[in-house]
Length: 413
Ligand SMILES: [Zn+2]
Ligand SMILES: [Zn+2]
Image (cartoon, rainbow, N blue to C red; front, side, top):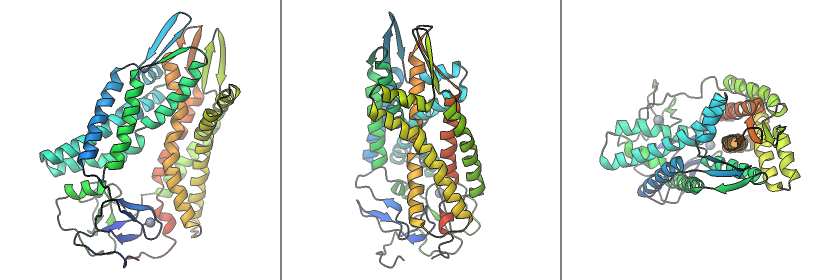
């Protein structure tokens, strides 16, 4: 399977995280993408740029981030009154209105995690230059991959777009400087991710200069730093200290638990009102679908389609897709494996975009509080919906796609 690969002194083994095939990694050639020979998933995208570029992007990102924290985001004028919101106003107002779970979730994914992610990259890269202990830096950098999907600035900006469009229909709205800082933050974070070669960082942080070249049976690969640990009885990864498993423990039953809980909550999330908008003493509760119909009614078709896709299609797709994968895995079906692997990667990628509606409501709640004249409040449907989004992300993480391929053939080494 790997004979065509050119051998090099620094060659190393890698287990494909999607299908579980062990193959030899190509030696580093900037610009090259090493793919799994069986399922085609990307094993190593070898960046052309060095580590200075992602460091510069991360530092610029931290500057945008601090500016976004202190600058105002949006202002509205209505009925002779004025209201202004910062990025943190929405989650704080949700918490004080009694919706702690959703408020904390929004706070976490828009403020804590993006800041932590940038802090991790800057600490690791500056620490490498400053010669900080590798052991410490490995302990820091291992959180980068774990936290990445939970940094949702890009999704937040789409939620902002929907909120802004809804507000302009009712009030006089003024965009403030934090929005530009957030756009800068999104771009610098994307550039950091695009330029950051995790494999290079892990290799430089490794104490062990001589990688093993022979693959033993029972080798365990680390899901965090991808190192293949050759110690048969290892419990933790030699390099990043993450727990080692051949397959994620109790993957099928845990995924089923998340899928069933999410499917159960998907019903109230769509039946109960998502938010209530009061304008001139008239209160109108909206369900998710009601909000989409309202966007269509005022002619905002592209936004209506976007919200429909993110809030209705994506959660359904995830639930049905995961159920299909679980059933076929349990029945040991070995057909359509490539399509199933591609579906899993798609589900993993699209899951976080369902948060658009939650971010939208957090921005509306932050701004519109003019008593009986105009007010927006969040309702139970939004809590159920937020739970559906989080549970489906957990479900995708709990599922081990390598289980699908275990029926495909014996361990190939
Ligand atoms: Zn593969
Ligand atoms: Zn590791």
